Length: 252
Image (tube, rainbow, N blue to C red):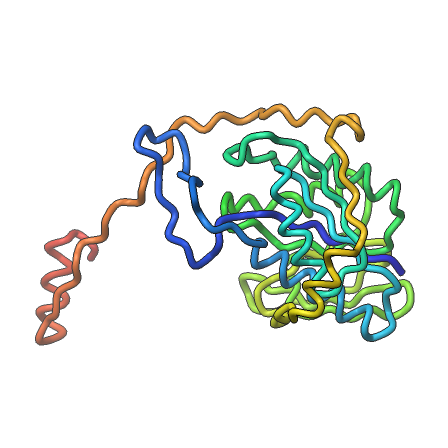
């Protein structure tokens, strides 16, 4: 079984994002970038399936700017077998919209014929949470989103999902799309020898035009702003004082 894993280059989760002075977007100048954390979990899960003998090949895919090859090299160092980079933007500030990403991924799936696609449930930069679902719709495949546990048995996948009411376990036939949630696993660190080996692993470079997909944005960002500063809390001496303060604020 071949497993395809889409990965995205985003601002490192340890970096505090800053808004541009003109409000046109987030300032990415000289900012550390890394693999989207949910995608890192997806890569780890695919590698574990390979180590368990349930997958033969893990292919990592990234769609965006040329610099995303660094992100793919990280996936290769973790244990992916090969990678595909689809250059679809020249500017690091250009974010390819989920539908365009899903259309490109569909074309890659048609070429590669994987039985399973494992993606992060969302990217931490735009929080869209849409690509996996759109890809499943375009392919007509079953989907299991927000996975916290995954087990492959023959031509079916049993997935435990994190839902509002708790946990839900479903079974989907392969081929299928699974999107990884935070508790699916703990991603490994790439060792230095594996980082060196990753430099020799195949990384194919394509463009969106190669797949006949128009990546022109259909959404317009009107304004980007910092969230309002939260006012400091206060201490109260009793329940009666708490109720009084809540009434003053119009909460109760």
